[in-house]
Image 1 (tube, chains in turn orange, blue):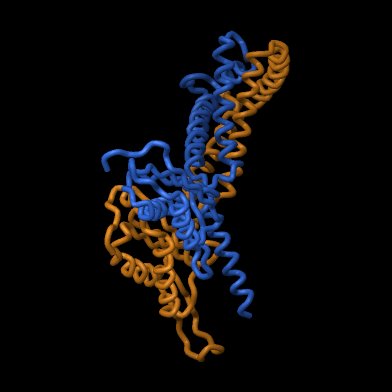
Image 2 (cartoon, helix red, strand yellow):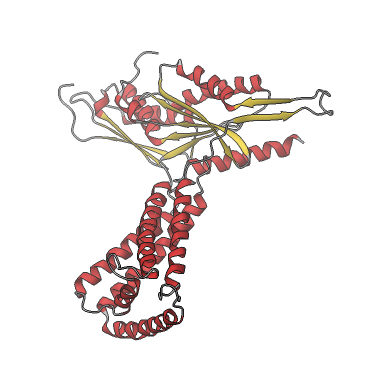
Length: 206
Length: 199
């Protein structure tokens, strides 16, 4: 539930895929059908001649080269920057503030603010879960998702541990956390298996 | 006043669960972005060299475009066709990544307060334990495959000790019902034809 731009990922992947399919199919057709090849050579040559004409008109006095190449280079630079930004946007969105409450006259008239760090909830849940012997891994992290702070709990149980038993214990913990904080934070519990739970011994006695 | 808040929370949870059970396509995006950026960087280099009137590195943009316009030119047809096919296949992979739903091997555990997802592997190992206990066999004799709508339990009995398929089925179904997964998978238990000797 991080801030990965999923819709954008899919749109750009679909576009790149379509472009490659069209280009590949075009090359395949040119290689296979002579009629298509002669049509393409005729069509493309005309476009190219037009482009070379433009290049001739746009030569700079200083370098006697056309500036359109520099303009094209600028377009490519924008593409590179866009791609780097796209990569940088994957998986971000970690949060640090759980609650920021400003005192107001409607409440009890007290001035001031209450600010809770996400670490409050994270540490409380994590320390409670790390005592358990049927879990080999616990990660608790907070994310800003749709303008709301939410907590993600990822636990890796040992082999053979029933997920609903783990889940009901953790939901009890969450209920206790709700009481402690006085408000409900959206919580995601992800029960998974990693290399550590796969290669450690199954729990026999509990 | 209370109703809309709860409704919003439910919508939020539904949204989170949808995200957690579907692939974010980060890996494919990463590869695509690196590829496009590399190609764009090279093109940028050549166009800048051409714009400044410097000698080209590999091929000038004008010559490259002439080569494209002359296709198929004197390139071997078979090689060109294969290259086109490869290009289209790579495009198809990216296209499928963009369009297919990309469900992850996970199930949702229904709960009113917390959004819970479970990896299918965890469900499988829990069900394998149940099947093993009810059949009285060792770990190696049980295999469980969990998919979105089906649970397949395959038990290899110990030679000479008959197993009751219904008992295993009932035990696994009871455990599965206790989990209250969404979607609910159906259980099928299979006993292997050949038994195992010496366990």
